[in-house]
Length: 435
Image (tube, rainbow, N blue to C red; front, side, top):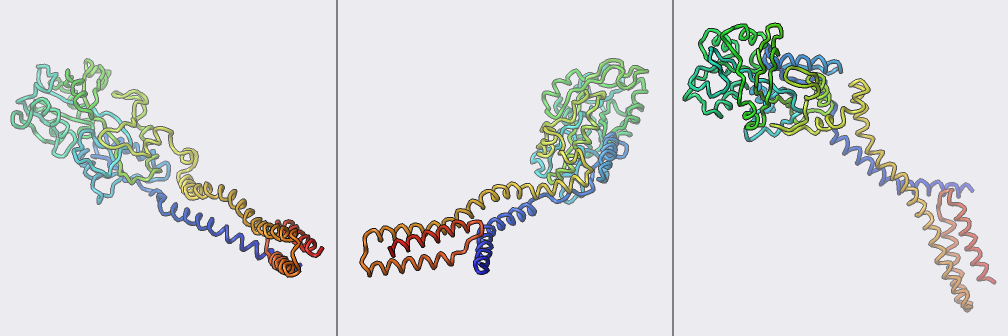
């Protein structure tokens, strides 16, 4: 009994290793592949390009900072001179930045291949002011005039040049002055220029309030706003309603037609998905409400414009943030998310293996038992032929060989009944041979 028990134990371990080892190797391969290709833990800092200190873009970045830092992720605001400088920093892999607002229409071919959009955040109006009593409602009226179009490298200047060029206005036929926003405000108030172009990232509300306070300076209402929108896909047609800037003074005194570029939130294509979710979630909170130039829920938009839409952002817009990050603290959700990424593939592979391997194991053990029945059946056929004594001696030796092999067979205890039945059948064939 001790010898039989030892044989059963040795057979069981051998069979387990024979069939368990390949499965174990497969599982190890899945673990190594998952660990190698799964994204690392998200960094705890987002380097956000926040524009100039006095710009409206910086105020928006400050709102993002307050929202995101509630989740335990620090936001480091990086200074830039405007959208052009922001785009330059994002495109340069050596610059330590992650995300920033980029004005539409700045990207020229070839486009940077390391940047993705997290969505269209809002339309930024281009505010065009003119000085004088004669009404100006087209850009063509500025030909030959003195214009302040923003400093070198600013998004305002680049946008203005594009729009003026569409009206056949350039430096050859018009005095275009690349000056800072505050200098442009002073120049038009003093009469040194006839017109000035501003956007939110170049001129603060305080600066534009100085222009509204002057009775000699007026805001252009573009009659061709719709034509500009149709010509340039990065533009949006906007309406500043009567009294939209000052209800008490009813400024502007009538609905004003404007155009403005769409501002995208642009990030490096290696931005961690968890940080992408935080940024898009913050964008919905910052830009989702109603304001002068947008309806509630109009922004952010999952629309591709100058940059391809990030797959992570597209997923968020379609199905919302990840379940764990919506219901758990950020640090805990991150740990569980990474554990699921590792163990879920293992679970998917392990479940079928646990169902297949036992069946293969049972088939293998049974096949070791059943193969002797074919030999026993052949011996029975030979016995029915009434062999002579010499042939019967050979048959007896064959039965002895089978008997010895069966006695030495190693099987798990769960198959012992089948092994004992086989031994009885061997004895039965021997008894038939001896009569």
